[in-house]
Every structure is written in C-alpha cells, then in structure tokens.
Length: 430
View (tube, one colour):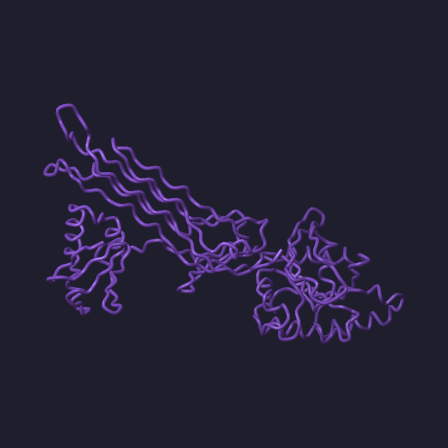
C-alpha cells in the first residue's frame, strides 16, 4: 500500500432540478390553472471520518467527486426527487483547506465526525408558485440552483497518543509490533518503515494509540531521508517516546540530532512530554557497568530518566508501558480547535450585496444571492427574463457597470447567465 498524507480534489454538490411549467387539463377548460411542480434539491457532499483509515491514497486515485442532481418537477404538482448526498470517508486527523484561499475549513479529529463540504442546489419552483390575482396563467418557472463546488486540499496528521521516534534501525517497528496490534515490515537495514504504523496498546484495561514514525536523520526537516514527509504526524501526539539504538556508533549524538530536527521543524514539539528509551540492551550481555555508564550519560544530556529495554527480547518493555500509561493519565484531555466555514454571511443574504470585476472586455458580477437568482432564471422564458431584469434594475447594476467602464457590446456574466450591454441596457443572451 502506498501512503499518502496530502491530496488535492474537486468536490461538487448536485444541481437542483428545474421547476416545471404546465397547466391542468380540465373539461371545457384548456388551461385549468398552473400545476408545474418544483425541482428536487441537489445532493450535498460530506466528509465522514473513518478511524480505520490512515491514508489519503483514495483521493490521489480519483480527483473529482460530484453528488447527484435533483430531478426536474413534473405536471400535476409533482415535485422532483432530491439528489442523493455523497459521503466521502477520510482518516481521523485530516485537515481540510480551501485550495484557493489556503484557509483552514475543518480539522477533523473526532472519530465520529461528519461535515458538509458543498451544499446541494435548491430545486427551481414550478409555475404553480407564480400564480397571482393579476396573472392567473403564469408561464414562469425557475431552473434549479447550481450546486456549490470547491477545490480543496487535504492534509493528514495522524492522531495518536504516543509517537515513537528515532534514527533509522533504532527498533521502532519491532517495539510497536511487540506492544500493539500493529504488524509493520521489519528488517535489519535502514528505512524499512516507509509509512507510519498505528497500533492500539492496552495496559491493565487502559488503552492508547501509538504511531511508529519512519526514521529521522539529520536535516530531515529540509527534506532529506523520509522525515520531512512524516514529521507532521508527531504534532498530533501527546507524548514522544524517543528510542535510541545502543549499538549505534554514537547514541548521544543520535539523540541530539533528532531533538534538533524537532526544534527546526516545530519548536513546540520540544514541549511535549518525552520518554527516553535505550533499546537493544540484550547485546551488552552481562556487562552491566558499561550499560549503567551509558544510561547515566544519556540521563545527564536529556535531563530525563532513561528506560533500558530490549524490544526483541521483550525485556523492560512492561515497565516502559506502565510509565507511558502514567504519563498519559497526567495530561489534560486535548482540546480541539476548529475553524468552521460559514456557508452564508449575513450580508450575503441581501441582493444588494454584490461586486463587479472587470476582465478584459468582460464584466463578472459576484454575490451569493444575485448569482443564484440569475442562475435560476430560464433564458428561454420571457417572463423569467423580465423578472431578472427588473431585479437587476432594482439593485442599480447598470450604474455600477458604467462606473467600472462598461462599453457597448461588452459582456456581463452573473452566475450561469450571460448578457450583453446594448443601448444602455443588459440583454440576456444565454
């Protein structure tokens, strides 16, 4: 399996169905009154957290996702069926960004979370809605509203209580395989671990999640080795278990290098509780004095108690697990900060709130309400076009366009509708 912790995708909600324009057929009355039904709402798109996922690989294979459109309305006041919502499963710990603005929309750390990404378009109203005392036979009906669409960036920071870090071949994979249900690839050469491995550990009924971070080397934060791709996963952890290989040429230097990499990537990582572990002590045999000297030296450098273990022989592992459990219990429960995007701002509900941007000889009108109104206008309906032009006149759009420098023959785009400026008027052409 290839591990991916970043992806860029396009997500579109379904369009609303079109409203119908029809009339009852009654005896002796060719047009017994409007009975065009409304279109169905388009399906919305959602992200749903699946705690069993730990990669964004699916989103690198498929880049475009679209919910179902709503059905059109029918005769006899029959309303169209709403489109099915689309649910996309993502790993716990995924951050959702707006690709264009780089704004954080959601930070999904709750294992049961569901959030809407794009909202389905409203169904257009049928002509039955437009009957009045002065217009008993309206031919006016609305098109469905376009569904929202976004280009978004996904970034995964795996959620774990404990991050096991260290240089390549320190024995991280062996340790996580011994203490948890994880089954990583293990070999006697560097960079065996190419993806983070998650495992669940249980100590006297107390459970916690552990992540084995692929080996870090000097200048990992710059992109050397594998470290820069996986350093972000340490940020989610609550405790760091720093595994040191006793058979290394210089265990003390290994410790200093990794601490420096954490500092350069994000100095906040140095504030996390750290448990220092000296692994592979079985190779020392009965030479306890040499082992004790190394432990004392490492404790002096790290200013922390050092736990000697042999992951392979499972020696000292039990004491380490109890220490991890005790450290986790001391910590307050993590608080998750979320930045939730607002679908509508109060001023966006007003038709008058819009802006005009000039692009060459084209003028584009932006505004949630005015774009939606224009998009739902049927360009083939004379009554609909008259209604749209009346609204554009009420918000003084022509006055704004003249200030922006519009000239005869220039084009105006509002939502899905296009117009041409002619004789000091807007002529809808599509």
